[in-house]
Length: 286
Ligand code: AMP
Ligand code: FE
Ligand code: FE
Ligand code: ZN
Image (spheres, rainbow, N blue to C red):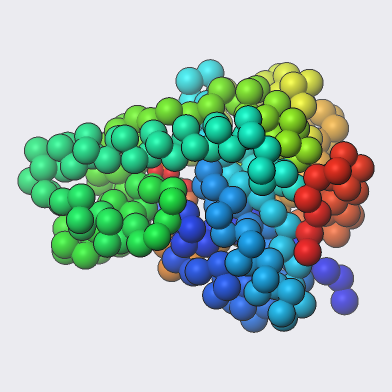
């Protein structure tokens, strides 16, 4: 049987809803052999996930999904195999997480103006122990208050980019994030490039420019991309020498359209990524 590899999943260490341990068990139940744990702006779930994976024979490739910016648009960047103690990368992740917390009051002010009051305690409750506060936690607090039915409605009406409750935050310039990942012996893959946010600026020329800056892979098979986009991105990626990946971007019950394994990465692409990480002394799957 071919290996089933889901390269990009989230735990409740960021905005997923499964603990790292539960996530690993759910991945095995879904018939997966490998997951790439890519929580937003933190490595904190990796150790627990790898321990759970070791007990049941499921491999965990360490990853992170960094909040970056390209031509003033939000772009998510996956870093695989990074040394989790690399100082410059850790410093940048700390800065990103701080900006997530620093914007909370602005969110609460905007929501109060919209007649949807929330307190810091309400958000602390939905955030739990996550070091990476995200809009989904605010959405969950709104659900708990009965303001909206689910995260989707909260984003569609209030929290999504450009909506009346939206607040900006800091994001790393993408070329700098690519350098930081590579400097930590990791491998950078652009996440869902033609999802909402940056599609019109992430042209073939832009991808070629990012490949020159050290980008090595492109996430093509993702629920944000229709079949036409996947064909075009596959061609652009091949032309630029980018490794093509696929993933569910699983968030537990936080994103019901993204069940584990709905998109996967081909074993040959996975092996190439693992080989490159090993060659530069990064952290491989375990
Ligand atoms: P933030 O990290 O605070 O910028 O929030 C962005 C996160 O919200 C993304 O990583 C997604 O996981 C999540 N998200 C975006 N849109 C939706 C949606 N419609 N429903 C649920 N989660 C969403
Ligand atoms: Fe997320
Ligand atoms: Fe993302
Ligand atoms: Zn993600």
